[in-house]
Image (cartoon, rainbow, N blue to C red; front, top):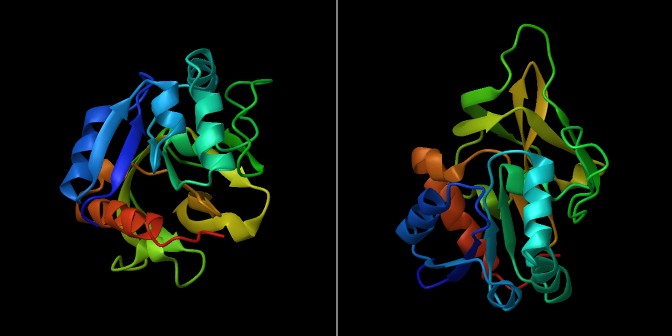
Length: 213
């Protein structure tokens, strides 16, 4: 939807410019920000991320961004999208970085991708399958459409009701989660061609719907 103000959290660990360009393409007014005050006042937040779980959460904390995101997302209830590591950080913790707490916004834990005769990291295009029908995040996206993944760990939510989509890679891996105003995508929509752009457009539309409970 045209005109949506979206703040992309710039903490030095993500495809910031690719995400910015994709969001701009689908009509968002994008602000790249490293300013905690600006992040705390944001109308809508996107947290990209590549790299190590523990390094990412420590950097957010050291820059004052974790507290700012808590204020915006938990206290003010603004819409949020975490991408790749940005999704994994929603969990309480990760096998990748023992004893490092995550944001804890969606109960669950991040574990290593495991399975017989598979390559880790999981890299390339894979199908996202709907866990339930009717999610606005997948409007105009056929079930089983391909999205681009690069990851060695995956998020396992405690509550299956928070799973929007999953991807088969020897075992089912959760590819999209949602709890109230918080959404996470394990795939990279900015690298997922037409389906990825549609997903971002749907997120913008959903973010303006008013209620995400």
